Image (cartoon, rainbow, N blue to C red; front, side, top):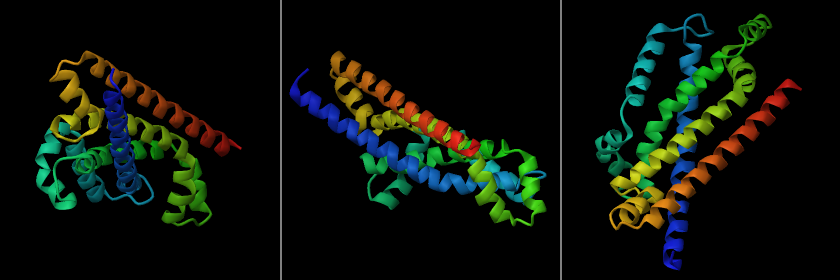
Length: 220
């Protein structure tokens, strides 16, 4: 493999990491409140509200059910409005974020629902407000589970970022298509796959360790 191809692989890896990290951060920022609202407005929870819960749940489910490639094409006008272009790594962050946000929202909802109802009842009996229960009970008790969920979302984003390369999103997916597939450079395709595998393993390992540390801290 030539030095030029190695440089291209490194640049593409940087683009992929940029897309994944920024979109994961934005999706968590937007998905966290959505997940909390879905949880606390659920049946029998601290702020039960069927209308909000069902309406928000329908929007989340509709977005989650849309394949990423279709979503990326469908929101091209929105992407252009936000970043001024529909091509490139920055442009790919918009559909990546929109795709990951409902996924993270459901992950957070699932994590919060695992919190022992007895702990919530104890907080309520001591006069804690709904916001205090959310910030001091629900989120701290479920943080280790949330970290694992966000880790899973990041791994999914790595795969989606590779698909974004098919539509000019840049990154390792774009490199694999332009050189590995269209120019029949098998070594480039193999190198891209290996890098993606290593990247996924690294993200999973880091996520597992952070989650384990948070769980131990919670137990203490």
